[in-house]
Length: 411
Image 1 (cartoon, rainbow, N blue to C red):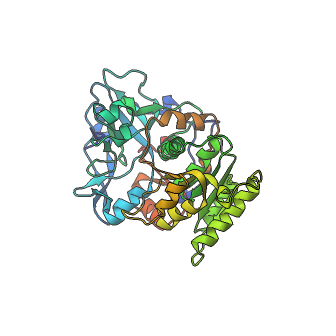
Image 2 (image 1 turned 180 degrees about the horizontal axis):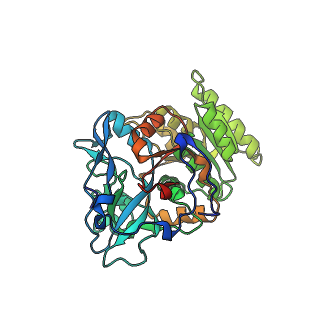
Image 3 (image 1 turned 45 degrees about the vertical axis):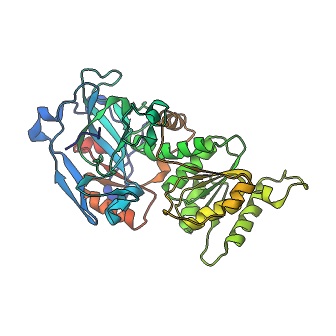
C-alpha cells in the first residue's frame, strides 16, 4: 500500500539560515499538538505539493487523512529533504521506466511527529518523533521473505509514480516503517536518514572493510553521505572526485582524505594515472613484485550516474576490487567487461536500501556520522516551489522543506 494522504544530540541553538528560517531546536512533546487533525478541521489544512505534469507543480489543499486503523499511524510531516529524483520527475516527468501519468505528491526524505495511532500499534504514542521509511513492500513475495524487500516488484515507494510522496502536512503510514528518534537525534537529521540509508546499503553491498581505500565518484549529497559512511565502516582513506571545485572543497571540510577535480579535456588514462598516484601515496606498502594494476582503490562507489565516471572507477580500482553503482546510469553504457573479467572486478548495483534505517540511526546517534553540515538551505512548505528552483540551479547540498503549520514547531 502507498502512504495514505489522498535518529537531538545537544539542544541546538537557533541561528538564521537561508530564507529566514531558523535551525531546528529540541521539541518538547508538551509543545506538540497531538490531537488528530480531524478533531479540529477548522484549524487544520493539508497543504500539499503536487506534480501535475512535467514542469508543472502546484501547492494545493488535499483532504485530511482518515483516522488510522490497525497498525497505521497518522503523521504530521515535519521535514522533507529534496532529492535529485524529485527534481528529475519535475523536469523530465520520468526516471527510467517510472513515468508520471497522473498528478503525484512529491517528496520522500521524511521525518514526522505521531499524531494518533491505530488500535494495533505498539511502541509509538502521540508526540513521538519518527523517521519515516517510505518504501512499502508486499511482504509476501519470495524477495520480501528472503529480506530483499527493496527489490519487491510490488513496492509502493513514495514520490515514485504512481504513488504519492510526503510533501503534505498530514498522512497515514504503517507504524512498522516509522523509526522512533532518540532525544540526541533531531527531526531534520531524521529526514536525512533516508539518503543516508542509501549510502549505508552501498557500503554493505561492497562490502567496505577495515583499512580499505575507497574512491567516491561524485560529490553531491549521496556521494558525500557515501564518503561519510565509508569512513564509518572503517575505510582508512576516502578519495572523492567531482567536476565542481566548490563541491570538492566542501568534501574536504567534511573529512575527505583527498579530492580530485575531473576537468573537461583530460583523458581517462591521465585521470586514472593521477588517481593511482594519489593512492600510492596513501598506500605505500605495495611491494616491488606487485604490478601497476595493484595500485588502486579497494572499492569504488560511483554516485554521479555518469558513464565517464563509471569508466574512471573501472580504471582506478585495483585487481580484485569492487565497483558499486549507486547513481542511476544511462540505459546503455560502454565499459571494458574483459578488464572486469580478467581482473575479477566485481560490479554491483544498489537500488534504494533494505533494513538500513536502524544502522543509519545508530551511526548518527553515536556521532560517527554528523549530518548537520550537509543542510545548506531551509524553506517552509509554502515556499516549496522556490526550494525546488534553488535545488534545480545546483545551489547548496541538502535543501530541506519544513512542513508543520505550527510555526513554533518548525523553528
